[in-house]
Amino acid sequence: MDLQQHVTEATHISGGILDHVITHTNFSVDYLHVDPPEIIFDHSVITGSLLVDHSSPPPTTRVVRSWKTVDGTVLRLAITGSLLSQPPPPNASPYDLFAPHYQTLRELADFLAPEHAVCIPAATSVSVV
Image 1 (cartoon, rainbow, N blue to C red):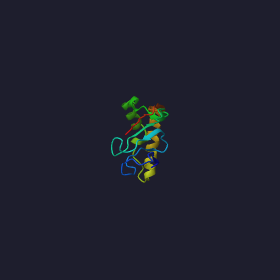
Image 2 (cartoon, rainbow, N blue to C red; image 1 turned 180 degrees about the vertical axis):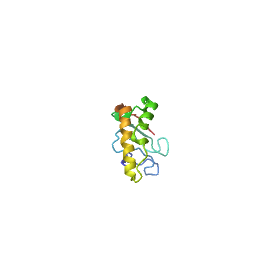
Image 3 (cartoon, one colour; image 1 turned 90 degrees about the vertical axis):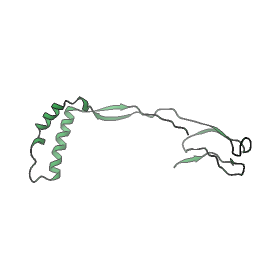
Image 4 (cartoon, rainbow, N blue to C red; image 1 turned 90 degrees about the horizontal axis):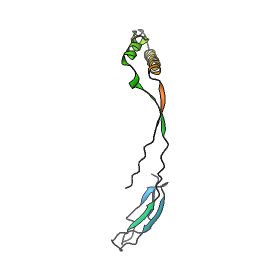
């Protein structure tokens, strides 16, 4: 899981590492100090400082359609005036039934709600446990 344990010395009065500071391997620990056990408790007091990158990730670009601007009456008239309102041929294969629907609806979408790019700022979140 690309995690790294930063405490390398005993943290309990009886020995062994019972207290941990674990980060992702590409996360820097600037300073880490482990007090010997018995100073305050039977466990060590661990203090340190972590370097946190506050740079924002780049925004993403998405291609969208503005469906809210489409007039429902115009769309209904366009569909009823197209080959979609015609009965299908009796011996049509599934492809023969699907292809005209896809092509007609795509053309109507391109005409009534053309695709356009929008820039979406990336959300940043930092959580420290």
